Image 1 (spheres, rainbow, N blue to C red):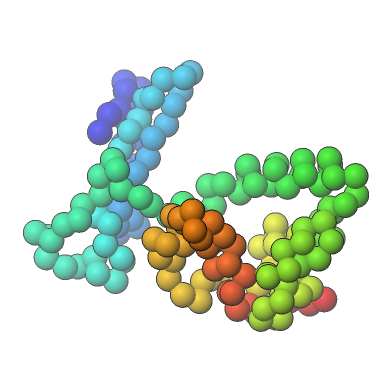
Image 2: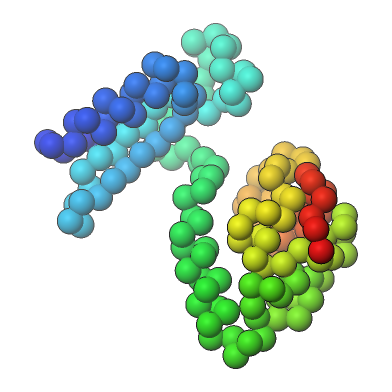
Length: 166
């Protein structure tokens, strides 16, 4: 845990989220002018429905704990897709169907009525894919050399949470 002078309020807010029950386990690091000024770790790594187990029952969150990051990569993904569309000479567009043409992820489009889902719908979170059908396992999150497409196969198998208009 490290908090540089002038950044104490960040630590106060971080710790208040645990006190209010808004977090069960988290890590936060911030850099300012190329220097790490905040590095915080708190809570535990148990699922939220198991949070009330014995206080003597680790595992507690540590600097090496793997965590699922939600929404943190949206900006980078959006820029990457925009650049791909801009540089694709019209082979890819926001109207492209995921399972066809410029995208060509046929496995996605062939399963569970997703054959009409477009890049636009996916990027705007309107593709009917709000939650996973099954838990993410280590083999999906950390694919091996013999199964490099574990995540794309996992995502392709997901059922729609709602019907997507054509």
